[in-house]
Image (cartoon, rainbow, N blue to C red; front, side, top):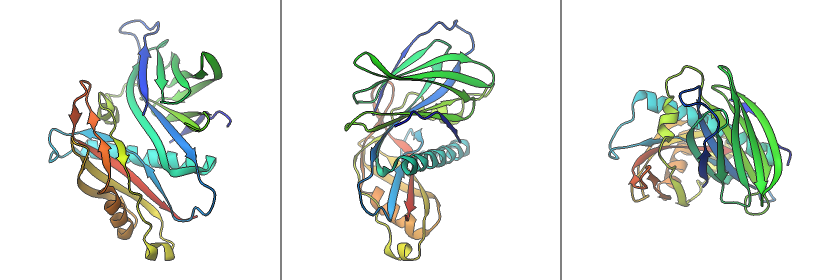
Length: 285
């Protein structure tokens, strides 16, 4: 697979300090690792893409996110869904099988983050330089001390870019998504949502069934669900946020209600209840 460096609308992250001066210019950046797998041969009609979204910490499951948090979570989840659909289509991936981890990090020029995506590869992200308009990164994929690829990528602040590589049977496709914050902005809510929280990890998943009448009518679309994930990993309240068809919403809700998660955890490792915005896209091919 050829490296990707394209601007578009469970990993361990270790940050090594660089040469940036204390108090000098830095940038908040969301770093996401997506691991994808090839689709099985055969008819893919009626496939369902499951794209994770934003995490909002709760004091209690009954807590209500602010309007700003809600709007940011929906926008973030839609963007992730669109990006994942693009990767699925381009590389013929299994839309329902992937692993995703996102972390909010603060980079100064010279800082390097080591990502260990539970595969045979180590991924290193280094901030080379920073201006008011763009952040210049270098993304290296290493195996056994050897550099397999070294990709420079400059990302406009406030946008995102993707760099990818392959890694055999365990993690066939690895995509690193870099999202540096725009200049002079207060810390964006989507950065605050990820700060200090691990994302909930699915340990039991039931795929939504494409409603037969909707399939016959060639109904397709995206369903956004806001899901309360309790501290024990069970699913609480599910609220449809957006849908193109009620039948798709009901199918998505019925499936997700049966899911179980490894819960989100804070910096101390304590399990916390969260609201999780999950995107399900029903596609006929």
